[in-house]
Image: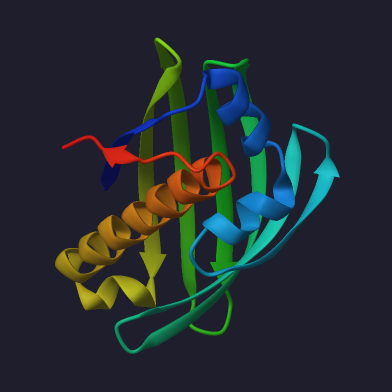
Length: 158
């Protein structure tokens, strides 16, 4: 499944890029993220996601590996984890592209998700709905976090 979101941040790409590497602030932007630790700076991280999807409460420890980086323009990463309690495995390939537009930044996020196991019994529609809600919550939180300190208005791209 693929999920995408675009939005404009009234800050230059360098300011957005710096926030992406502030792990404590990023944890606060990721829905359900119960914490993250640095394994190898800008290469590998561990995180834990706790989220409810339908009747299931997922608790997924994630291994996150940063792939391609083109600072301050783009990054690719892969997150892999398994909720052993309900037998569900997830793989998320995430992409973030930052494009300067004057003093602002156009942000494009995409996630290719693969879900295997018991959660699949809910059906593609429920999983797709939850995925769309999650990427929207993440984008909105990231946007609010980036602009709050600057007191600037924000606007999503439709």
